[in-house]
Image (cartoon, rainbow over all chains, first blue to last red; front, side):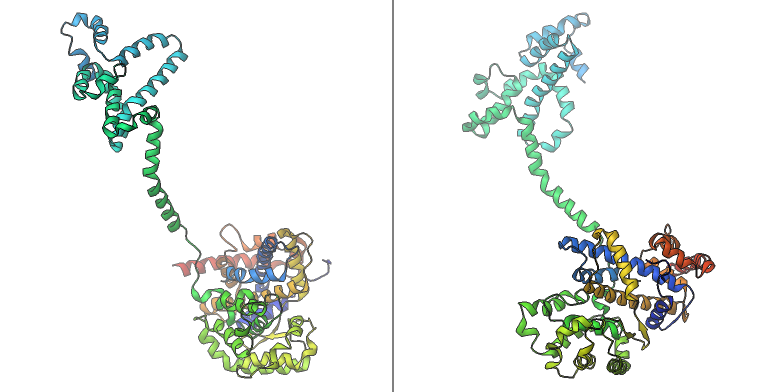
Length: 78
Length: 464
């Protein structure tokens, strides 16, 4: 990653959360949201990697991602 | 009692020591006589003593427990065997007369050399089955193993079943309320549902986009059936298709009323979306997929169901935007526009975590990235719903950090030993974390901990 690159668009995350919740978003919530998203992605990719390994695929395929998405989302249900 | 038995017969106390060998010599029990002789022989060295002890043990095991086992008093034999054996050793001389009187005819002729106890064994054999004599005799030396066999045959089944019951009842599987199950998710916002529809509608050879989000029987049928199984049932008419997608929506009881409330304004929203599509032609997150599906979708479609028809019409009207991959604006269920996360960010994260998950330098293909983006959108929607619920419960109109911390604790991402900040330090790459801290240096660390304390208090309040 280029050093000057932004980690993530804070405003976008903010807008996403705001749009979905119809609530105002206080300061620094987006940091936590992004952290949570990172954890989610980690879990998702881990599960997908396991799944695609079991299926004998070389890389992570879209199929395995779709397969594990539901479970991972359920895991991250608050 | 044993000492009494020894001392009682000799009437003159002085000759007790001399009389005991005499009584042994007089008694016809060869067991005790052999025992004393071999004791004299083997007692010289400790090895000899040990060998003799082993021999003696085997001999007693050969004779005494076999007798009791034949009588099938297995339960009683277990505990009193050792005292009984000691007692029999001591009482052997005096009990000899009783044995000879109890077994009168059979054993007397056969077993002149065998000890008395063995005589009774043989008499039992004869009582059981006289034909088995030639087979029974070798079994005499294997008494212990027979005992084991008996124990196994009697004890095995109840133990096994008990264990199975125990394990089956002791495992507690994770449970969720029915309303929280993944199949209930299709109450997502319009974008989620739009792409939900894209998934089943893909009638190409691979599984649809969101195969995990519908209950498997509902979802598998169209996709598999497109190839082999149920082509005439599922696919000829799109109304069926719409009806099979809608039960998944209605299958979540908790969110149904909300969905029904929103359905009217959302139709308007869809209309807006359609308008925007015609204007911008970039509202298709899965544009690649759409190009494949233009032919089956709108050809024989009846515009009954509003949303589905809108989606298909959308595709019919704008086939030229099929190749666009730029994520356009989406509308949440509250009617607010938003953009999804940039694909670059998502792809970077996905690549990093695929590497750490052990997939090596595997490249993230566009299809995979699309799936991940879909998962991202759903995740964000779910997160927004949850945060809104927490904020509303706290009587706020603003999503606070405490809500986020509560959410992460509910997700089991944080616990008393893992603070959110430690998670941030661990999971965000270091340079990213530094960049993250740089724009807002102070507030991240300070308020976060404070908010965490607040959240703890909140959590305690919730618990109590």
